[in-house]
Length: 365
Image (tube, rainbow, N blue to C red; front, side, top):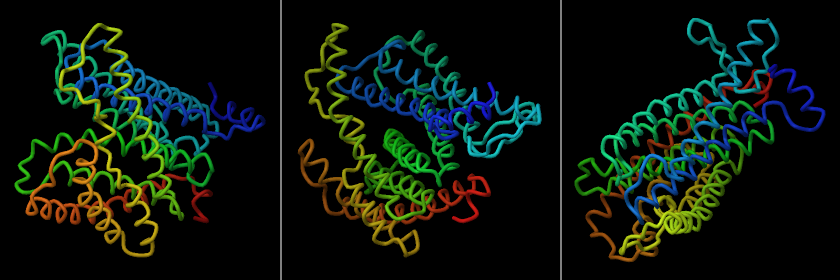
């Protein structure tokens, strides 16, 4: 398949070049996110699972969709390069040589494809793990950690793919959607911080502030226009709202269909959606208002907002008491420091991704 040949007829029917493969990769990433929020809820409300469950199949299918789309673009680009045909730099970015220039891979699709390939390896490990130990009762088993990191790599590649087309309308929407998907997915990474000795600091809340601010800033600086941070925040809020309904509903329906009971203490509170800071919109507004200041300033403010309001979110959703003041203050201070660092890193990552755009697209930015 010649991607330049495909682009020409697509343009005649109003489909921008590069949009179709990028959209397929993003669709795969979102499918994996659906599988993750469903799987987390399953582990919370039902418990044990096997290798072949519907949530797992969504995870596998999403990675397969992204991986196959990435592979197709890489093979097409390689074929065009070997035939000395022009390669559209808007499709995934500049092509780089792989395995001694055996393949020519647009850098965005290379990263998303690597994540999908790693997912296959860890998927085989997960199947072996289930065959050896049977039911898996936790979300953070060793093969699951590898699977989640692999999908995260694919999602990073998805952000890169759309960053190449950031000056196009579809690229703008895609950056906001891909960054929001990555931010939402990263909340499960925060669970691993529970194993760290945080002392007086709530490591989960502080980690949530770090990842949220960093990815929000990355998307905002890729777009580099007013409203960029708010666009990412709005998409995250939309995903949170949809999954808030979907996660418990899908889990209950699937449990009934398979004849498995919900746990007696299952409260129906969405797992992954509840990990997402509801204050993220406030952080996005703060970023927009403090736009002209050094990135560490709005980053610090964002870290304080998230860690400061996290106990409020927990109390509103599931009840309980406010943490003791010493732990609360220590966590907010940690959130401020990590937020400032995340703001600087997010700005740097966003600026780096802007350089993926073709020279003619980037010259006036």
